[in-house]
Amino acid sequence: MTTWVVVLVKDFNSAKQRLQPALAPASRRALARRNAQLAVRAASAGDHILVVAGSEEVAESARKWGAAEVLPELRQEGQNVAARRGINRAIEAGADAVLLLSSDLPLVTRDAVRAVLDAAASFQAPIAMAVPAVGRGGTNALYLRPPEAIALHFGDDSLAKFRHEAETHGVEFVIHESDAMALDVDEPSDLVLMRRAV
Image 1 (cartoon, rainbow, N blue to C red):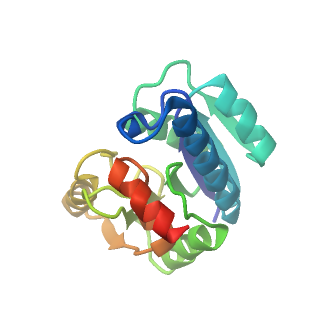
Image 2: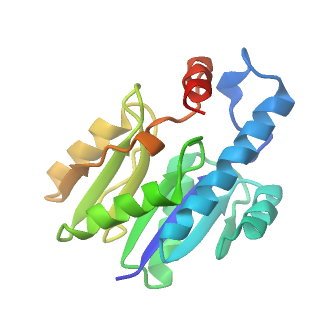
Image 3: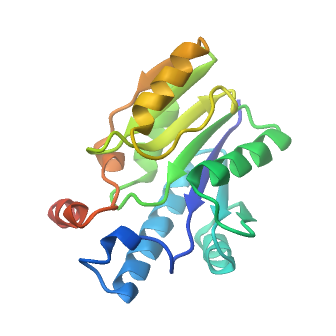
C-alpha cells in the first residue's frame, strides 16, 4: 500500500493574515516558513512527499527541504482546492491512500505523522481518519483510503463536516488525537499556546 503525504503550503507572504494584530509582516512570514519546513520534514514518514505550493518561492524551498515532488499553484484558491489538486496528482501516480497535512503546525514531527499512518493501517478501507485542531472544530490532518473516500470540507467546523460526509457515504470515520498535531497557529491566542509548548 502506497501512502502519499500531501503538504498544503500557502505563499509565505500571504500566510498568517489573522496574526496581524500580534506579529509584523516579517515575523508572520518567518513563522509560516518555519512551520512549512517542519511539515515537509515530518511528511517523510509517508512513502512519497508532495507539496502543493502557493508560490514559486514555496516550491523552491520545499525541494530544498526534501519534498519528492512539488505541485505549484498558478493561483491560490483555498485549502480545499489545493488539497483536491494534491489528491488528483496522487491518484494519477497510483497512490492507495493520502494524508493531507496542514503546514501550520509548530509542533509536528515525523513520529506524529507516522503514528497517524500506523493507526490508519489497522482499519479496512474505505476510511477517513481526522486529526482535530485545538478549538474551533478544525482539522489539521486528514487520512483518506482510497484518496477520494470523501469530499473535502477544510475550514470552519471541518471536523463535524468530515464526520457527516463519511457517515453519509458509509465510510468509517476515526478521530486520531495527537498532541504534536493539535496546535495550528491561526489566531494571536495560538501564539501563546505555541510559546508555552516550545
